[in-house]
Image (cartoon, rainbow, N blue to C red; front, side, top):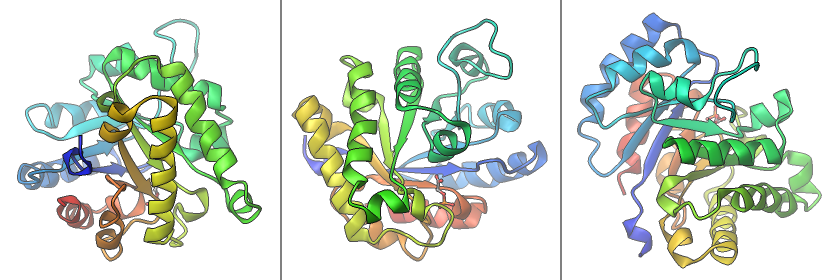
Length: 256
Ligand code: PGA
């Protein structure tokens, strides 16, 4: 499969934002526009509270609606957690796994992230698996140790899942919500390296088909040069996805 065969993806990560009313308004504006998104997969990751409404609204559309987290066990005494069957029950198609805010603020380990990725695939939900380094790790030359460790933990757990059943997102922590975007060259270098590791640990078919997004201060004015990079297959976007007009510009720019 050639590079051009990977379908780009533009994903909105609302984080802890939007009431149900705000979510309804956003989805109502996005859905007709996303119907013309042509060659781009559009995904919206909402808080749990508006997930049911967003999923219902998107039911007959191409837009994927996803959760920002879940737990890998299916049921039981896990107070405060939500499982894959509970998400599937409300029509959820995808889930963000291992976002740096989950790892850094809520202490999720590589092992937990890997189990979540595996469970999502087995349940038929598309996991968007996030990896990335801190500023200190980058400055001290430890970027690749960190990122390759995160990827290997997931690949060890994934078994023989194929490249279309997962998406990776390279999100350098120092670029998230800071306005401090990685240069397009930095994004390309990291994502090329990640694809190389996937080729090594699995095979050409997996590495050539798996989509790897960039995330961290993606905005309408920097998306074109990010998307122009050969190995970058799209974006996972926080701040600039909160307004539908801005997200729509990103979707247009991803149609490469
Ligand atoms: P940002 O967040 O676009 O606001 O930097 C990206 C993310 O955390 O997924």
